[in-house]
Length: 41
Length: 508
Figure 1 (cartoon, rainbow over the protein chains, first blue to last red):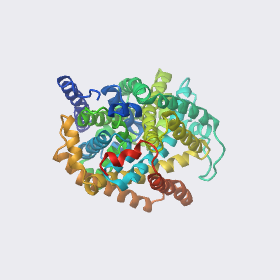
Figure 2 (figure 1 turned 60 degrees about the horizontal axis):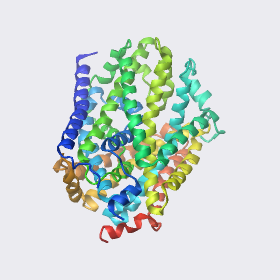
Figure 3 (figure 1 turned 90 degrees about the vertical axis):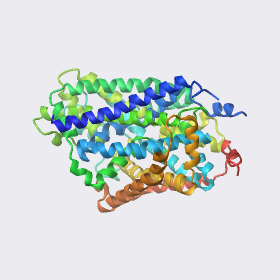
Figure 4 (figure 1 turned 180 degrees about the vertical axis):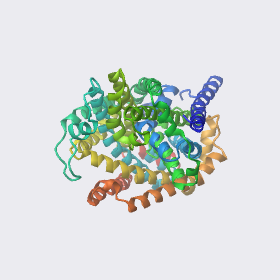
């Protein structure tokens, strides 16, 4: 595999999977901090 | 009736995880596995990731947040959420619902094929000539477009099984049906894909396949077609403009972080298809090495051919555990497809209940019964031609037009971006700010408009797949026209159900 292909693979992995992980962590932290979120009406 | 009682009556998610998994299940479908890898490969390789990321940020995530806000604010399915912001635009929602309904009719047949191929995986029953097996032995493809042929019972039986499973999920309702199925199927789907990818990247030739996929052609970025392809990919991939996300968000309780949910769903969908692309091109690299040819020669065009012709050939070539790999691959396709099919059908069931005051069982029976009858058309000898034609036209014209009209309505006609942003920001930690508004006011309409013109121009230049013009007019343009007509007809029928109180509730 060429260097440029490896770099693009890593960029995709970091942006996409890192983005998912960050969104889940953010959601979890805020859900715990504010238990009112997602309470049933 | 209190708001909570009314919400429980029409269905509600039991947990936040349940909603997120169901929305992910809707977005992650067959296209993530068999379309995305080829878009990357054909549109600049690794360089395609740049317009792709920009399209996610400026179209996919903003539209997802918009649709969550519409469903969550008005607590109605698509047609009535649109009517709540502009009385005469209910038809746009029904237009989207009609597109979803017809997509469900052929989506189910593919699920049936997946079930059959799960069975065929035992002992690689497709034999050495996988093309002849699929087109000849299995679907019994007719010689020409209008040579309908009889029903193929090898297709009808697994189709009936797929329908039975979908009916069972939908009959059980939002929480006990869709949510429960998503909680089981989505984690299983991700685990199965990870196993496939691990096996794929450890095969000989995997690096060659990934090299072909990711080597960037930065010159392609100056081609407007690449940018249109990036916006088209995120648009088709995220279950937007189908009314699905509006319906799903309408089942949410009041206090829900909408924008963060959209980020999780949108990025998970993108992350899944990125992983699928790695798996697909790694095994294509292996196939190329096995056949002593180049990856570009064995890659094909993706889609149905990749799943049911190329992959069986790859499975034949594997050094061991061929049956296990077949079960994993077709199981992955089936799991990805069934959660999407359920969401596509729920999009029709919810507004039919609201319009005609039907019980859930009656609405599920009516919608799925009609869709099941139509799906038999694709189980005929010429079904593959019909499926291909309807899919091409509904996606490239119906869906793109529906998305374009949706953003024009909300941003420019009803001017509702401000109130919807306020609604999102009241319960969300990631704010729908200037980025969100500019994306929906300018970038998304311009790109969807360009996509519409591009698709139309391409269509008039080259007759699709060289099918007869009569076939394209009847099943292609005819299907698009039918969805528009159904949109107008359903919007003009008087309300008998909960939708009757909508105008009063929004102060008209």
